[in-house]
Length: 157
Image (cartoon, rainbow, N blue to C red; front, top):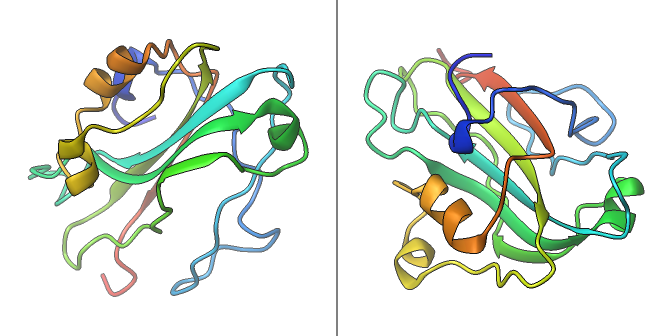
């Protein structure tokens, strides 16, 4: 793994089992899907970020929030469905040309029963420069229960 995930978590576990059941093809945008084996009676929060926005050598927009879903039922995840309350719509990776490889990180957190998972007004106004650690602390999320990271670059590079 390259670098650390927000919250200090560095272990890699499989969260996503595929992108529509087929290969990842340049120019195709498919919403990720996956299953977990964790407790199905709990709620979860899914976070997807790019810590290398604008580029790895100049990450001035890190962390770029690509996807944020709260209130995900464990029973849904067990079936391979990522439903819940979408706080940030999914936006597929689109690293700028000549920006090199970007890390895309998925983190799944157990959501405390009494947690109010929301974005602040400032967080809602922009996906970039997101302080993931401040969000995790404010919402009361612990270490991720599952993570996945992959690298990609602009298909023209």
